Amino acid sequence: MLDSNKPVVEDTEENRQICRKYCANCQNYRKHALGDHQPTGLFCALGKSSAPNMREIGCFCPACELFTKYHSRGGYFCVRR
Ligand code: SF4
Ligand code: SF4
Image (cartoon, rainbow, N blue to C red):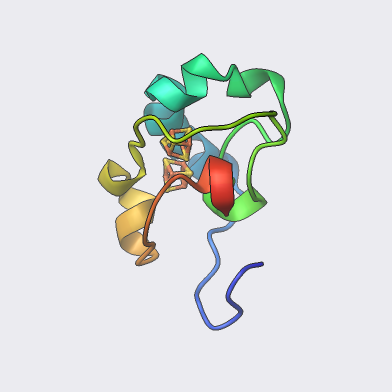
């Protein structure tokens, strides 16, 4: 569940493009073929991936400008948002 007290990352094409710079290059994304499952990105806004048997093997979120902008914590939003 999203914390209602936190500002929410908006689902915009601009934010999706920012996300692609990080998620699409991350080991976790490639290993689990996250592009083949919904949502395909912007997990911090759209929720975790529907890909099965997800593990946590490297996350680039802490380097993402949206992560900083929205004071996010933890990363691995594709696994446990
Ligand atoms: S914080 Fe992570 S999931 Fe959210 S936009 Fe950035 S790279 Fe994508
Ligand atoms: S949320 Fe983190 S671990 Fe998941 S695909 Fe994006 S950068 Fe990789």
